[in-house]
Structure formats: structure tokens, C-alpha cells
Image (cartoon, rainbow, N blue to C red; front, side, top):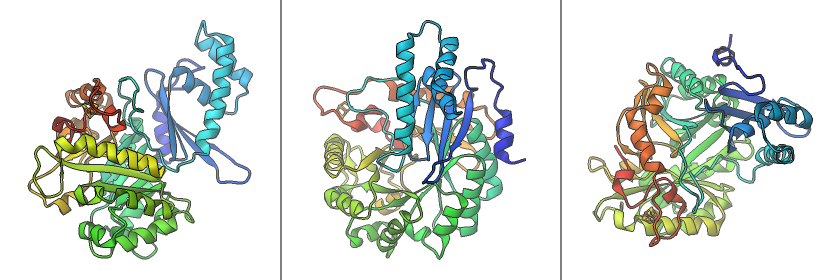
Length: 424
Ligand code: SF4
């Protein structure tokens, strides 16, 4: 029995026939003239959920949205869906419900044909009201042996974490990387890899990873100038990154650039984004390395973080790239700046978790505080435990003020506040 089937059988049985059971559901829909569309629908215990489409777009749904999406994805007619809604949600206005069903049909179509190719998911648009933080949907996981990874991947599925991004070590064992991607996709998870081109460019490795089911590739890209990029990521890495980006379209592989924000890279951000667009890379993750006071080695001082974020968001909007803020990282005095740039952010985003190969789960921001062990602790206990409560209380509190511009980065935490950076 495949792990996916086993895990599906372990999802609690639904009590309400009209409402999908809590857990992860996968729907594949054939397309006449294109590859099948794959929908991951996560149903949370409160009935709300998350829809991820082809690993490239996602939407957060309320309980009625979950019911409508699940019913439409099962191929039900609008009338059947409306009957289910009437049974499940007493008192709903029929005209509104009909409109909701029509809008969900549009949403499913739109998400299946996104303009971008990667689930870029900042916590909220500027101006949005603070809201309860949704449970994470992505895990950032360093590569380990397959026997160590398999149980972790199964536990991620059981926790409703639909997406895993693997971090290869320098010069990883290609067979181990391929086996990890195979195991993640066999577990039903969306799978990505994030790293340096130098560690992923060997021989036919990329083709093998795609054949194993790799959904997206994130490559470090610091600058259009090879000299600057290579000074951070190693000699020759810039050329390899550009060569890999040039191959992703033919491989139907979603690609993302991860750009470190330090003094040298911020100075030429417009040129970096222009070069990425020329390479047809339109999704960019930004992570800043920040320090409390100006230290002079290139990290961004706290007092400069808001202006830096404004400059970055304006540059991204000018270039019309989709961007994702990753939690800023506090400058680590025990590492050189280059070492810290290569280490990258702790987590992919604020709706991600860090999972270490032995199972330790760490929230995206704050001190490196272990929230529990994914292998031994119930996920609900981890998510409701003290470490994530502290994290949520920071993320959910209002942070915007009238003296700063409305920035997307502020939806998670004030970029000027070191307590809100990851501190490894
Ligand atoms: S969170 Fe508030 S104080 Fe901090 S940068 Fe944003 S708007 Fe300014």
C-alpha cells in the first residue's frame, strides 16, 4: 500500500456527509490540451482551509468555500453544490450562495492558469487588518538520509502541511536528493528544492529531480554581476544559476530566485530584477540580513530596515515581479557575512516551519526555540504550544503606524524590530 493511500485512510472519517473531512485531499483534473491540474485541498479542524493548485497558486478558504471547492472538484453540478450548502449552512441567502458557487468556479479556473508560476504568499496586502495566523502550509527541511526523511514527510502530511522545501547540503549526494524528492511526492506533498546552483547542476541531476516529481526550484541569485554573486556563492555559481534558470521552462518546472538583501545587493536591485525577468524568472524571495546597530560589514542596520523594505517593494513593483518576504535574519557574529548569506533564511515564509532532520520544529522568527518534535509530539500540541503561541502573538498584533509607508513586509512584523527577526 502506498504511503499516500495509507495516510488518506488515516484521515478521520467525516461525520457530516456534506463537509469534507479535516486533513489533506488531492484532486487531479484532466485537461484536453495540457497536463492535468492537481489541486491540494487542506481542510482545517474549524472547517476552513487552503487550496493549492499545481504547486503554483494558493487561496485561503472559509468553511463554505471549502465545501464548494471540494464539491466542484468532485465534479458535482452547481445545483448539487447548492443543495449541500443549504443543508450545511442554514439561513444562507440562495442568491448569495449561487454567486459564491460561480465565483469558486472562476477561482478554480484562475488558480489553474496563474500569471505567476509559484505560490507567492505574503501574509497580507498592505492595509489589510490583522487576522489570526493560518496554520503553516510549508516546511523547510534540510536534506538527510531517506530513512530519516520518510517518517518526517509522513508526519507533515498528517499535520496538513502540504508543501516541503528541501535544503541540500553543499555537494549533496545526487541519489539521496532524488530519493528525497521521490519520497515527498509519494507522500502526496508538493516538493521544492532551495539552494545554490553549484550544488544542483551536476550532470543530469535536474532532469532526474523533475522525473522524480520536483515541483519547484529556488536558486540563490544575488546580482546580475557574476563577480558579486560568485563572491557570495562561490566561483562559477552565477553562470550555473543562469544556465539552470534557462532550462526550467522546457522542464515545466516552477522557478524562483532567492535574493539576499545586504548593502551590496540592494544597490543594484533594479538590475537584478531586470536580469531575472530576462531569464523568465518572475518570482523572487527576499531575505534580509539585519543587525541592531550599524556594523559596517554589509548587514542592514535596524534603523534602515523600513527604508530598505520600501525600496525593495518599489523595485519589485516597478519590475512587476511577484515577491515573497522571508523572515529577516539577525546577523550572526560567529559567521562571516558570506557564510550567513549561504546559510539562507531559517524558513521559507511566515506560513512555514523549520523542521530539523531529527524532528525538531522551530517557528520562523525569534530565538531558535524548539516548539516540539514532529516525530513524537502531536501537531496540534506543537501548534498550540508556547513557542508558536509567542510567535503568533507577534504576527497577529497590529504593527503598522502612521509615520511609515504601508509595506507588505509589515503584515508579519515590524522590519525595524530585532525581536521579530530570526535569531539563530
Ligand atoms: S511595522 Fe509599523 S513602524 Fe514598523 S516599518 Fe511597518 S509601518 Fe513602520
